[in-house]
Figure 1: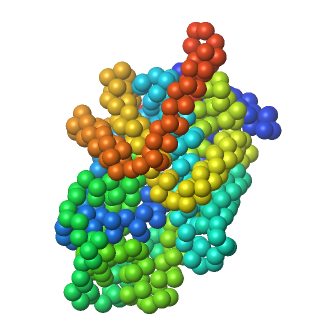
Figure 2: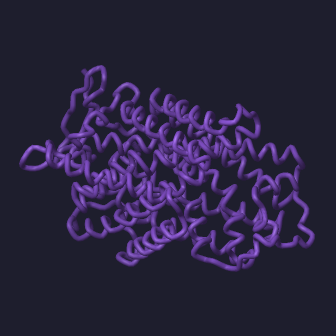
Length: 478
């Protein structure tokens, strides 16, 4: 029998685990560099090769476009400051689920966990798998359903890699993130040093849409999305809790710098008008700098970027499902941690199955990427907003808890974060179609399951103390 240390009411206790690891709990095994690589890998995804042309089309000049990307970095930093306090104070594999449970109660936490299982990370993985499939099909087509075949293969492969163990998952992530950053660096060099300056590009009619800051920021913030995933690894990070907060902030700084540089490169190589009229801005830049070989190379890069973000989302997404299973009556089968592999095997399997179903949905609509964006966005920003509310509730409810990192300028910073989330939530509903309604409908079914969950819970409260209280690390000395 193997012993794993957990904490109940601030006191360390042991949970015995057998060969299957059914009672094992996460152990701190991630280095800070692993955490930074995962965060950068999630955020620095394929969106930076698609969104810049859309942002340019909604802004009136190159300087306005760069300002939009800078504001996106600032908005992400505001959110990261809020998450840094939450994740460093309550390191927990459930991330937002734990904060919502602690601050707002079982109902909102249950709905969030259901959304994580059926909409948010599963939809994001499917979205990224379709991006990989689209670009891989340009390199080697597998027939009329080539993109979907590649997408399904990516889901199966990455799920298997992460089931093999946390070490395998993080090693793969570190390698993919390094390749991704090097690739983005190649685009920056090509735009700043190799591509000839555009000679008076003419704005295509479709690109002359005027300025729409609201829509531009929707695209920008979508591209910055994903940095909060580090919260789901907070119970597995070595070192002090403050180190986790700084890793998150460093990651946002790195991504913001890269996004600004790559947009300067696009602007230098194509011009603002050329960006606004481009259907594939990165490919157009590389073709201008290096010819057809450059365009082919960027297709490989975008495929790697999608694979990087998908792998990180597979790894972090399953942590919420595990925490959910530890607290839930209906979904208790998800709450099993494999001690030897140090990973939630059952949660990964269920997450993979649901993601494959969403790949099937995207295949039926024949608009896989767009369908998944619409499906995930409103639900994602709704719970992002509630997490910001949770920070303020916990400041009032638990004022004496030791906080290794405190969000500066409280309460202005969390209020600003809540306002940003409310704005993007509105925009995600105003600018999307039936996919958004499908995501909200799936969330609605979670409300029905919540009624069943509460009915099956033994009288007197939860069937056991929530994982929120059973997996806290001991407090650090101040």
